[in-house]
Length: 366
Image (tube, rainbow, N blue to C red; front, side, top):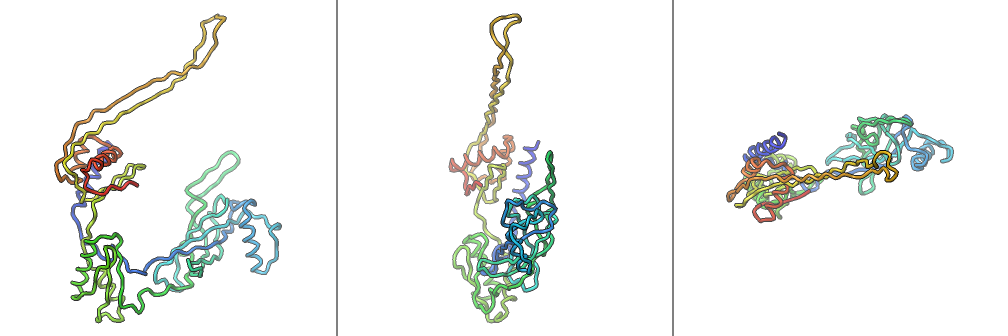
């Protein structure tokens, strides 16, 4: 029943996907230079209930010493033994056009052998970019949505207690340069490169502004010349073009995930005339240990454990299914549903059809 349900769901999705809708340009492309930036920093989480790094991890002890010295407290590594502190790496994503004082989320991950950082507090941690400049400072209570408790004989754990986050835990201290300021020419990059889609985007933009505003550089990039009517009004120009709708073209592709049995197929996938049959061979080997012992009152022989092997081979017989020329992927799913194949069988069948040269699509295995 689960097999039939899986294939029925796949067929329904394919039916719905046959109706293509126009997509906004902002959903399939982005302006060059307008992007996120990664930030990273090293810090300490304090206030843990004995679940911090052990004494074998020296890095957090040295960090505590350095922090106390900055606060005017002189101590040494040998004088400090703490289990309520954990060394952590802090990461964050700085969005484009973030301003000073804006808050961003941060992720906190244990660097040593701490058992849990749940309930701890991240103390002031500078976050740097790839240019080694500080762009934000993080601090706050760590939320993990997990726990880890244990004793000598048993333990219990939920989720991943050595990683968590601080919502809105970082303050932006340095702004990124404005990628659009003072520019008369912009570049629009498609998320998925395609010559047909690029041509349609150019046509839609030029029709909107009634002039040759856009020109394709290649299959994934479009050059935009800001019209004189929008001089010094770059934001309004971008807002006007990103809401335009186009119908993107999609390459015929089949994506297979052999680990999970997932099969994803686009609506443009076609199959040439081919005959398909699929049967499975099942081999079951079962070892059953048995005890062999001599007859009662016998003076010879000894008791031994001997193996007993049961071998069972089953081979299913399936019908032959002939697919007509130019069959759509929906036709294929319905035909394979009649054959009673599982999603994992479907992966093997599609690989064989591609090897036979009948699958008119790119086959990607992940």
